[in-house]
Length: 471
Image (cartoon, rainbow, N blue to C red; front, side, top):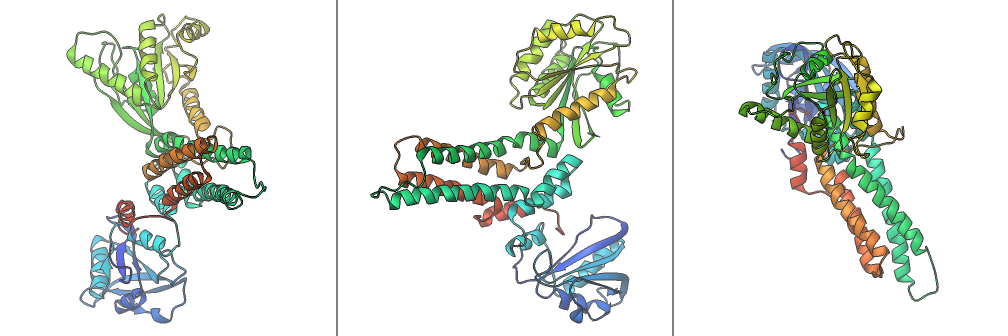
């Protein structure tokens, strides 16, 4: 990162040719530097939050392009510094010459994330909000965008502030007990202290555990399409995508490797993975494909178990599915899909009963009957998929349900959960008040690392280096 007393510049719009492009200049000399390559209104006298039409000069002091300059004076800017955004036509040459002119005039090229880092250092945003900006830029579905927007609007920060405030109140009561230990004064019963600590511990663990769902939504929800050979898995993938993406054949073992495609359904991005049919085989290559199918089942958030409804339920396949689903730390839901219903004569309730008899009660299961070949009831399947994720995201329909998506937050919340666990143990044991107070202070300090109230230079460098240049 450049020194904060320098003025930085960069193109903020995506690289390439477009109708327009925007360069951002920020720092103590922003207005002076831009004025050197500007013909038009006197920018030095321009008020903040005003827009001006003029001409940008190239590195040879010749007119380069007609441009619009928007002035943001400190501290009323994103970075908290004097900032000018210059909008030009989107030619690569014009963009390159503009940056060259700005550098010749005294600006330094910005590093990835440097504008956002300056906003953080100016106390315009905290670390959670800074990371949310990167997540908004990278969001690939409405749900991922909404999680990031909630964090940008301080939803997560407010929750952390509430937890820290509760911990401070708890610490105050403990400190008062220590100060008046020789007096016959009670500020709070031990039960009240334990109840408060339990509530804090529960919420910290809820936030920590939300990472599985939050990260899946952010990166795309992994969906394993599993089944026996010729059950219709590839036909189902093609029907969902409305495209002939996977090869469909009556020959057993046609699919040998994972075929993966992304599709946005409702608010969510799903990563559909068509797997090799699970069966006993002597074919070495097919065995490798089956092993990859099993690995996919063990990692998926959602399993589409395709059942050929014209045949009896294969207990061996169901048992293999259960065995590997139970090894999946994501506790996946399984949608049993009774395929080929257009030609099946089997009663659907009999198929359900046969499967239910094999499933442990811990497995969340759903049933959908359809014809992948004729795309019959595919909308019903898609609705079931989105409803399952809806219930994971917001099980009580609360608008305040917060999901975390950031691995850094997970690591810190894991440490915080360990700390709150120790705190609870201390409160329920004959541990001295001094040690209890120490546990509380440690938890407060850990949570402060998330928002940046407590941070190191190394952590900041790591966070902002992942941003795109210009942001």
